[in-house]
Length: 62
Image (tube, rainbow, N blue to C red; front, side, top):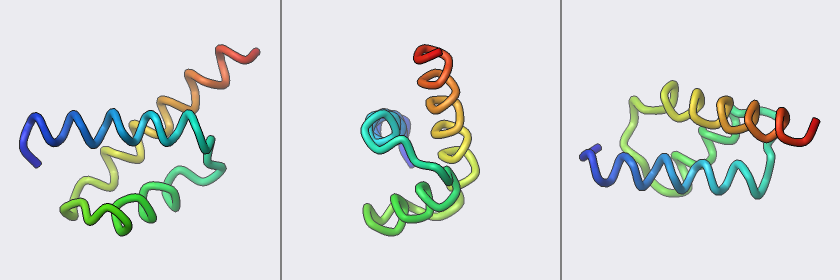
């Protein structure tokens, strides 16, 4: 992914995480990558983005 596109994907994924609050980040990322046809090889990094966003959401709620 190019730098600009990569940041757009991450930001989109953060927004989707805030909206849907997935229980299983790996499955969420897998479905996201398949649905939006993201180039393979980024699943691990994107999963970390989702997990980080979920931690932020959970800490702000508590």
